[in-house]
Amino acid sequence: MTQSSSADRSNSALDSSLAAAEDRYKADNPKSAARAQEAARAMPGGNTRTVTHYTPYPLTIASGEGATITDIDGHRYTDFLGEYTAGLYGHSDPRLVRAVTGAVEAGVGLGGPNRYDAELAQLICARFPSVDLLRFCNSGTEANLFALSAARAFTGRGKVMAFSGGYHGGVFYFGETGSPINAPFPFVMASYNDIDGTVALIEDHADDLAAIIVEPMMGSAGAIPVDPDFLEALRDRAAAHGTILIFDEVMTSRLGPGGLQEKLGVTPDMTTFGKYLGGGMTFGAFGGRRDVMSMFDPYAANAISHPGTFNNNVLSMAAGLVGLRDIFTPDAAEALNARGDRFREQIGAVIARHDAPMQVTGMGSILGLHFQRAPIHRPQDTWPADRKIAAHREGLRKLLHLDLLASGLFMARRGFISLSLPLGQPDFDDFAAALDEFLTVRGELLDEG
Ligand code: PLP
Image (cartoon, rainbow, N blue to C red; front, side, top):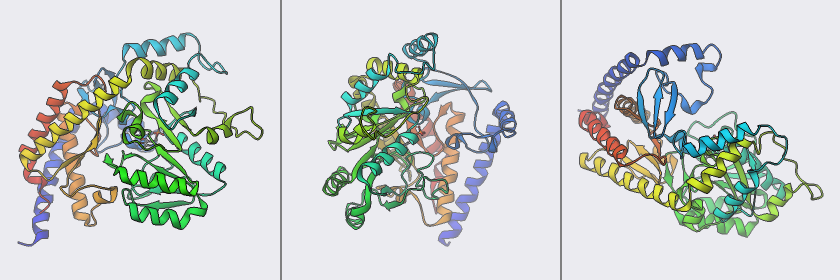
């Protein structure tokens, strides 16, 4: 038997299992189906946030409580997605509900500084080593736009180094297919964790390189940890050339009390934030070296303007403050990430017991499930050149996702998991049991032939 005929056989078995799983999903979720159709009348494909889309149609979520969510067909799921890291606090923590309702009752859109913004800024400055001064904005995407633009203004240079597979927001998508709507900066693309290649590129472009933007663990690309020597090399070369090193900690700031910069002991010039730091509300922030951030000081001559109607909106400021000050304390951060590390070991043990061609990546409270044995050092390691293998893995991601939903477990189709504070060991045990069942029932489909 040739390799391809064996692969074909395994793909057709996968196709029929997938078709059955989709039929089951459709039978279970008629209200979400109807809502998806209705939504398409006003939004392209019924969608306004690409990452929430999956086939045949996504579940419409009606409510959330603690570590669970409920869809409009009435199914309850344990939430392992955690709103792509923004849902760190789980759903409707009473302290956050009080913070938000208190802020609303005292009036929103106040048109000035408020009672919360400075204290939240001070807390963030105190927690994250690189941040002398900070400004708020409305999303991680915006934070990166402002940080990169600030670096260009500060250095008087144009180019920006980014890494293949990286994600820094809707206009900074460097995945396998790229994006025609990326912000029109002159990007120099390098390869994550490739010290020699990246250093050579930095040297080539040094005179015109304003900034290097890097996730200290790649998040959306599949929870790919960094080689600390790689970050050190970036730090060293950026300092040598006066290039602004920006850590995008929109996702990773939750991985330690002071983010990954503190945990790994590498301090960038600037850092961008988002996600959970707004206590579940809309949030973005960028901060860093005093000399760079002081360009925005409105008392200064020639200050850079950054007005932003909702920069310090009271909902995000009030919820973010209570969240970081009272809930996600340094001890809570350590404990959550320790739970994540144990959960990763638990999942790894299930995979090992089945000797399955899978692996789990990530750090602390962020995990990535992958259908491959080959080590993953950079996103390109997860992009098989063989299209059949790529399609097979895509099919397996789909099947796992649908099977987990049928078991009452919610995660991203691409295998992304981020833990929230209310998740407990019984939830982790449920997930491990569901994965064990998947590998028992579906195990032979995993073979790539
Ligand atoms: N940077 C990273 C590393 C992210 O993961 C994301 C979002 O997933 C962003 C930036 C963009 O943040 P937002 O969705 O708030 O614009």
